[in-house]
Length: 101
Image (cartoon, rainbow, N blue to C red; front, side, top):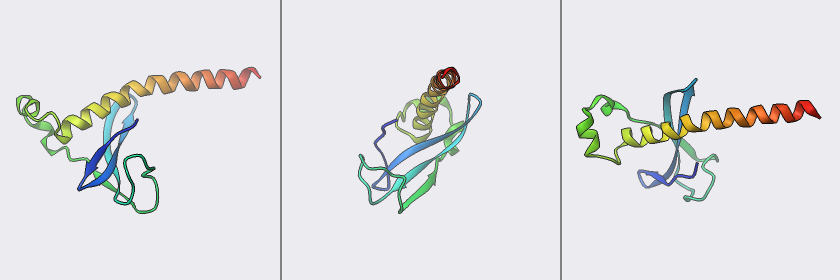
C-alpha cells in the first residue's frame, strides 16, 4: 500500500501485525535518507512504535482529531483486514494452479 507518512521530517510507512483477523500491533518503518518513492527497507532505516496511548480517549475527542495517530492506525488496520481475505484467495488460486500442472 502506497503511503506518504512522515515522522520528524522523515518518510515513514506503517507496518501492521495481525493474528487471524485482529490487528494486534504495528510500527512505522522510517528512513531519513529516502524520499516518498524510495524503498524504505534499506540500510539506514529504523523503527518507531505506534503510539496508542490515546486509544481509550473518548470517541468524541478522537473525532475532533481525524489525523491523530490512533485514527491513522485504525485506517491502516481496516486496509489490513481487507487485504487478508484477498491474500488468502490469491494463495488458494496459486496452490490450485501449482497442483494442476
